[in-house]
Length: 122
Image (cartoon, rainbow, N blue to C red; front, top):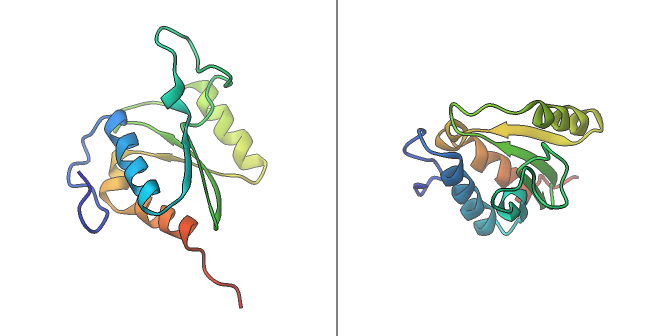
């Protein structure tokens, strides 16, 4: 569960729980967030309409757009997920891997706050 400071008390959580907590943060910050994994068809080898390895999250706010892959502490990215991350980064996109430890340490909240409230240019 997320604490008042946005930090997670237990870093040993499943990817599904991490996804739920990210949704709570995005909703609270009024970010436009699309979780691709929500649309998986049971028994399908990939999500409908998506390319294998496409990041779990596309999150948009006044500060830009994030592409984020989520994994549990021990989860590993597939080769297709790694390739997508490299392609997004090479194109100038903001791609990263989020794990429960990033939630527990407040890193995810900090990134999402920056996306929701970018610094005002002078």
